[in-house]
Image (tube, rainbow, N blue to C red; front, side, top):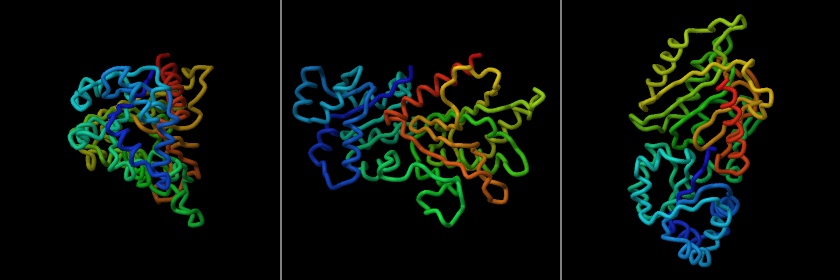
Amino acid sequence: MINKQLILDREFIDNFFISYDRENDTHTDFFEFLRLVINFELVINIPDFDTLEDAARENPLIRFLTQKVPKVVFEKNLNKKITDESFLKADAPVKLFLVENGFEDCEEKLSINGFEIFNNRVLIEKWGKYSKKLKPHKFKVTKSKSLPKDYKFDSWEKIKEFTHPIHSIVIFDRYILKNTSNQKIRDNLVPLLKSLLHASHDGQKIHVTIITVIKDKYGKPAFNLKNISSEIILELKKDIKADLQLDIIGYEKAFEPKDISGLKSRRIYTNYFIVKSDDSFNYFKPNGGINNRSDIEFEFLFDNFSFSSFTEDMYDLKNMLIR
């Protein structure tokens, strides 16, 4: 089972509680997130359960968090632990770091490994992209002037509003590698990935997996898989200096489980978001026009519903691909 971890510095949660401002939209939204988030593993720099119970009496946010976790891990030397490569790569691939003490020492290391970190000073600046209450997360793919800009997805540049640390990307779209007169890889998949990866670090290892149709209607290869993979990587490397590994996995409807429950829409999964689309991500024509007026939505994986949807999708994909 895929897990999520909340790595919590007690100084962060105490400082947030002390400085909490009911008139600040970011504060109230983040407070609600902490109050309602469930089903995660808590890693905290408290020595034992007795100390944790004392802390929960002093700070209701600690009480909220500890009431809903299946597991608590006590780490006295949290700063040392969270910069340890073995810790970053172990257990839950979905991790959120809330760290006050030593934030500057940890931030770059965590970002290079594809993980998000907050302290109270950057909370207002960074939290908005993860909250549907603070900014729109659902857009219409259109270039119509009648729709407000805040709700319009008219370029792959829009993805940059949701820039976040990334260590892996999975794209499920049957037609994302389809090159036709009105939809090209260079106008869709390549700029999509460039926008997702634009804040990646030089040499950072990032795994990109694309699950798509690779055969034509006669069951023959629709394209040279090796060549198209090389072409995509070459295009990306013009702007992205990360160390990218690209895997293309063939989708075949015959191998789709009959009891599959999700995946009715196209999906992009990162380690912090699910991006859902009503239609293929081949949104844009070579002339800049729109292929379809799809809806696209960004969902934060730490949201309770989104994480449940994510685990269900991963279960379906696994069942599909092992057949």
